[in-house]
Length: 324
Image (cartoon, rainbow, N blue to C red; front, side):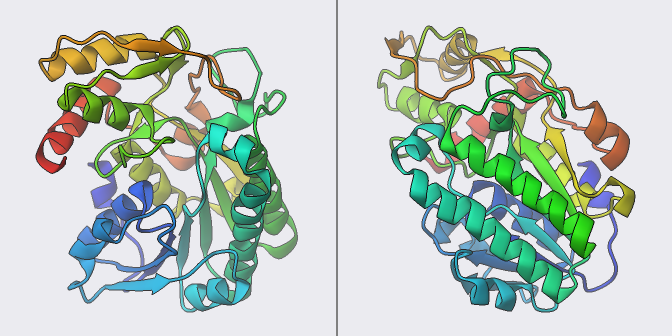
């Protein structure tokens, strides 16, 4: 994994918000394995303590229970921090349609609190999770930064606003910010449970239990599924990027395109299951097709994703077989 060779000043401290979540816990693990210090901030509303229990005996690891909607907690969390990896957010497009006020408070005000706290603490780099949902109804493929359409959900709106605030913090307060537009991340420790679970872990769990998954729509929607280690690489390389590349948003994906129906049958075959899916209605707010142009991240951040969908899905299936 190329990010293992990255070097930061000795004794560097990384703050990972949402550090007990799927992406956050993988970031904590990677940074600790590289020998640097990690402070994990999480309110455990969507993250899980079990995701970070393995780090509790590591002297370089510190856990802070707190909510990014609380500015004082954000200030405390940023004390002495070199790099912020802001992953704390609530996901799910359909859930955001049901809870727009909560999403605005959590994803916008929470991120703004973190930007302010990082600025006041003199943090070197502020890397934050954005989303491919900011492309909205823009029909062209591949998706390219600077060519966005009308937003389709409150969730997408929160991520677009986060990007604009981050740009302002770079412009007015000289805080180096880097927005990472994640495209359908999957891999170890992604939660398969709940009504809003991501499609790959949900399919794997149902198939392993000989249950019939439901595909929303006709299954011909496509996604640029991105293995977790590619996302770790992007976050860690953004921490080493130049100030000239700050204040921007970057597509973080593999640059491929997979159809949901094909993924379902590939998972069923890999798990040795002969199950046909159900088909349900399209979900409101969903983008039909998604595929990323990653040339901007490649050129400006040195991002060079190692894991294709096929390589990642094998690793993910192996993990779920051992851990579900």
